[in-house]
Length: 157
Image 1 (cartoon, rainbow, N blue to C red):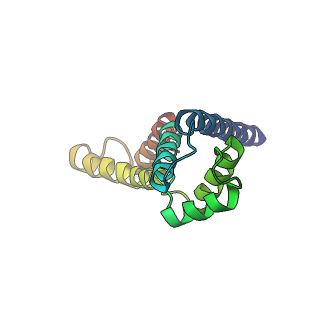
Image 2 (image 1 turned 120 degrees about the vertical axis):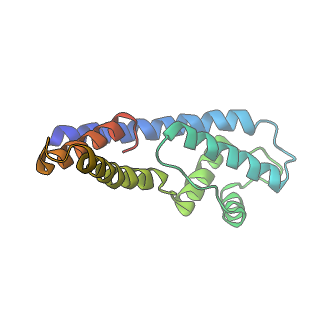
């Protein structure tokens, strides 16, 4: 049992490292020569960064931050007016904004839909086509287990 916890911890650490490196890449991509940026330019760059993070993670999706939340985080963490935004400031802003906005739980919705929908649909078709070939006591757990296996294989859970 403890071995699976080690795997989970390693996977979370890998995602954290991946997100950290992705934030640095987005900083280099969107925040070079940004002395005279407007608020809308900054918001657009942050939205692009959140979109990049969502692409890399897959199942868990972060919400795009509200402009008010972003303005507060920017004013709180960016000290030098007229200076470039540093990588550290950008990381602090993104951490605060992502923690405030949270997760949309798209992956959780998919998982629940598949975990309940697939076995129910399979049972319906089994009862119509071959009702006595496989007992329901074996069929339902088998289909549910196969669904969980496929969700894990496609990184949905």
